[in-house]
Length: 157
Image 1 (cartoon, rainbow, N blue to C red):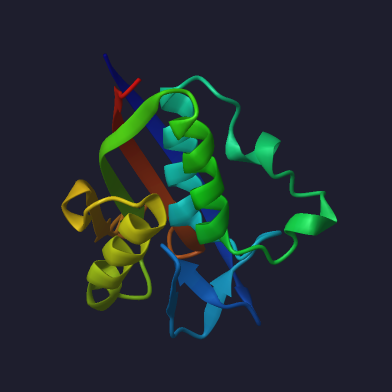
Image 2 (cartoon, rainbow, N blue to C red):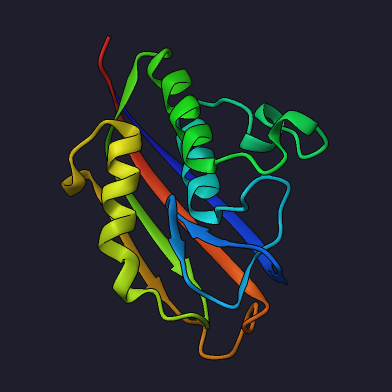
């Protein structure tokens, strides 16, 4: 049995914050605003995983009004989410993620993000695809970063 899940997350830019995507810190003058480290890639991927097995979204698992998650490492939250998914008897076949950002240029960091996410999920890097695109000045128009994630899971037990 196979299951597909889709996740989406978006965060606006904010001064004085680190920019973290897929657990990789990217040097940039602004970061993303959020209760945790605002890693939109990890958040979208967690929601895709949860969606595939019909579990509540990441916001219900780690509420943004709970002080214990303030500044939380989203890569660690993703690990916890995947452990919960594994507990349902499903495992990742592959993940395909698209980062939508007008700025900064992300190509130099894609492979590090793939490696980081694959390690967090305990899977081969060939099972994690990450790519980046712009919206050609449309959509969020440089105000932040959005991420779409799709996963394929298979029943393992």
